[in-house]
Length: 79
Length: 339
Image (tube, rainbow over all chains, first blue to last red):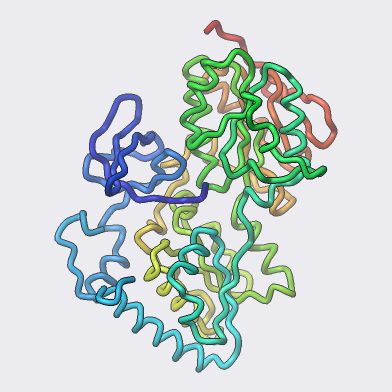
């Protein structure tokens, strides 16, 4: 129940839903709790609902760490 | 982490730093990882074996499912005495025993116990059911708004047979209780990132205000956890106690949820007595409520003190679990609406 899984928006669906993907897993989740999720965004999914949009700009610490480790994300795919 | 992974090298240098700090502290440092998902990640990455002997990771304080009171399970089971009622629950509630040792799993196969992955399934389940559907609302701050959202959606669709038996928990009171317990002797907390996606950091500021114990909000990758432990271990009382919690990628940090990602009826929560006891916030299935009605009702029915276990047993009424009688919702019965 407590899992929080990052998944990427493939496309938006009617009624506040979106098709999301993580590797081989594709599923429909509710995105009504977050504002303006767009295709390509990474969402934190909990119990079938997106509870947060991962903004690369907000993930500063993580990106800094990756840079320190010599990993330079070329795109949001690397997040 | 794979041997060739650059993250592994980074983790190794961070661990080296933790060892150096631990040595300079010269005493045992007790850090509690609050979330079970952290516990799993720590175990899978073998982190405990990599830490110096005087840095101890303690698992706790328990997930909202496993601390569910036996009385709650008993009442949920007794609801099934009503022959047309369907209970809906997350699967991890099945094995929690009631006072007599009987769990919900004993009712599998009855056709009246539905296991959900997501509260989003509730409106459709209720729409196709012939009788009342009661959802067992158990979870932390992460789960509560998803349930509220499903109930608001059901209300918008005019569904009038969906009820919530709420026993949600909140994290900060559990931490307060642990700090107040002299035997736990905790130095710091690793805090779950996804809870902060809803809560932000403010509810944890009391850690700073009381006697300056650090909390690090971290994600769930091994490197996130190592960073969190380093953040905790590098805290020294002489330096003033609180070090700004790190913001891992899973923990968006200081500008989060309330008001933005919470449905409006959940956005104001009234703290009340009874730490680690059931639910600060309860939405309710007040029959065919309109959204405004649901909001008003959720606000009026929010349990502050006793009775703290509440289930809506009919439009406008809750079941008072402690006194075993129905009590009217303060907002009054909602008007019935034709399907």
